[in-house]
Length: 356
Image 1: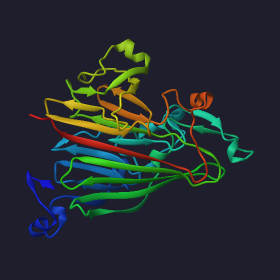
Image 2: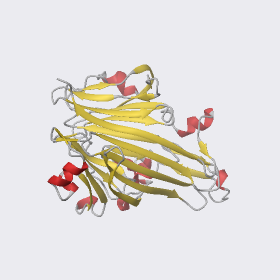
Image 3: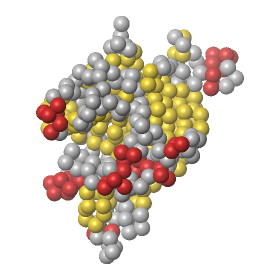
Image 4: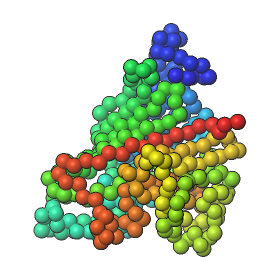
């Protein structure tokens, strides 16, 4: 592994430091002030300029993230709000907006996208024949059961920093879905690997929708930064695109009164089925890249939120199209997991310096 421009193996690191933490590692902390108070977090440092936090009590999502001193995980005014303060039905289903911050906000497990009231007759409870779902579902504000974290040496000589937890979304006479999430980063590396498994642990067919809201903020996002995505065709765009006419490729400075612009693109994948959209900042000489499997996430949304004070761009791989759950149920594309059935998702977050 390369640390500080020099290659080291396990023995050479041990000769120089009695604790691997001198090079990098994973440390457990608890946030202790304001709306964040009480949130368990894991601080990852790879020793190659990449550092990020895993928010254990927020579905093991990714919070702050930086590369060589430059932040790229979006920091909104909400902070990383404790899930105990979250009220799911607040703000007419838009309560996510009161806790929306960080590099990764996971949406699901049974619902994503817009608010919808849908049939729940499969649960066979006469007093709850329908279920109401708010924007992007419940999972992002459910604490995980932490299974473990630390550092592991592999047979090929790599040191892998890792954490694993389980998030349980369950209700009596309702869904019982479990998300097992493993997060990995190599010591000396500049990428984050996410391996998610969603399983129907109940005994009824259960809806499943899944979306990653990957949010990059300043200073990686800045005037002149370039959003690169291999688009075959744009399938849908919000009305604000035509009304504002702001480019979705060349990023402007923060805009007064900007209305979010959203696009659904059909993305060109590599022969292996992987797509790699990215944000490039030539002034800083850095890039952020999201690599995902288009067979796992057949839809992709581009989110531009370029308003003053809330400046961010989003990369959103999704299992379903932008019209949401009601449309998916109507056209037969809605996913139902049978008892014991599971889906797996393999995604990489990558940062680096531009060549030259």
